[in-house]
Length: 74
Image 1: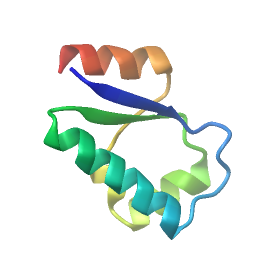
Image 2: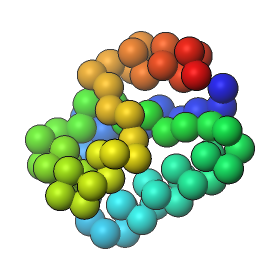
Image 3: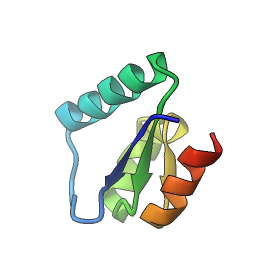
């Protein structure tokens, strides 16, 4: 399965443009049967994803290995 894993550990904030880019990437991959996996978002990014309900669009993982395994399993 095609996919992108984004390690967000060093991302300490995200604005509407960043959220828009995540959604664009999600839509592009979804059209091709792929997926985006987010890894290690800091608490403020998790809060923003929850408030905007985007946490429902993305699988969030605590490790790159876990995210990669979820892509392989489809």
